[in-house]
Length: 87
Image 1 (cartoon, one colour):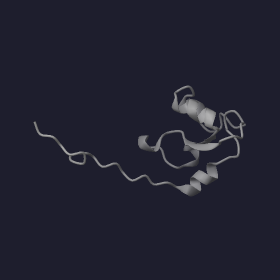
Image 2 (cartoon, helix red, strand yellow; image 1 turned 90 degrees about the horizontal axis):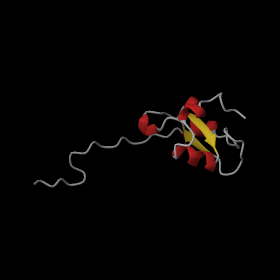
Image 3 (tube, helix red, strand yellow; image 1 turned 45 degrees about the horizontal axis):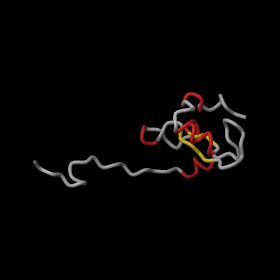
Image 4 (cartoon, one colour; image 1 turned 180 degrees about the vertical axis):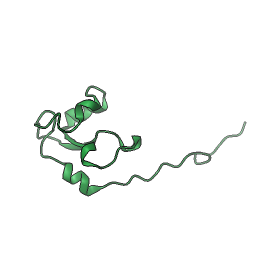
């Protein structure tokens, strides 16, 4: 049985390109879902790994609680679409 080294025959992960300007422009001082102003982070609605980019329609500001709920599957991607949740 041939044992492969970790780097052999693996598809390299593409380098992540971050558009800091787009992310800063999307940043709001409040959560766009609940209005909370604590621990606000910019979230990619469609992940970069799934082909989502640093574009305004793919970025939303979420408090840490809502952000965690999104990653836990308690808030669906469809709920995050811009325009449906502006406070």
